[in-house]
Image (cartoon, rainbow over all chains, first blue to last red; front, top):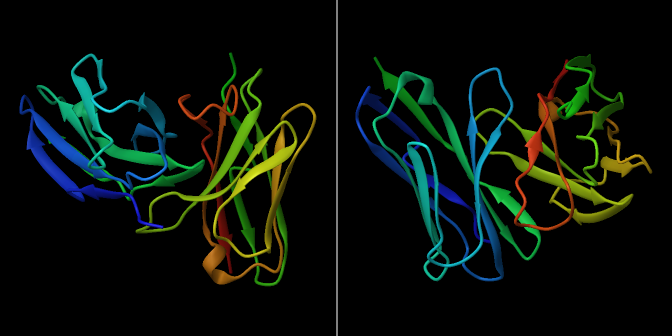
Length: 110
Length: 114
């Protein structure tokens, strides 16, 4: 079974910069793609769940897109703030098998 | 509404022992999943329970087992502990077994094996 891959592994940006990162997942038997934000010393927090090809979701300055045919999702953060610093995890549910990527560690410098 | 509660928060065991971790899901949530995170690894799926039945199982040895009670609380048991079992164990709940629902995570149990 193919893995869920996230890139980059880590990212350092300045406050106010916009940024994006990628999640690649198996396209076969695809059910859903999840994004989570995991801040240090806290538990992962759900951002989005997407199921349909072409889905776009938005929550404040954060948005995500989904391409199920080619097996990738992008997460965008507009105007990054220091409080956006966290690890962003994606997880793909294929045939009821949930697999997480290793995450992208984002650091936003004031 | 109380969140997902995991106990204990920290645990130290020695090789060969066994351990039981507990997870109380959000009230009304019937699906509970367990994950292991080790340094440098993403979250590795252990198993999922729904209505007291194991619906799915990850690629872990038989030393890892779990169960779910009628009130949806879940326990995970690891027998014959090995050094490599040192990890953060996370539990997550969701209202049902529908895959388009987000999971709500607990704070985890950090298990250290000496």
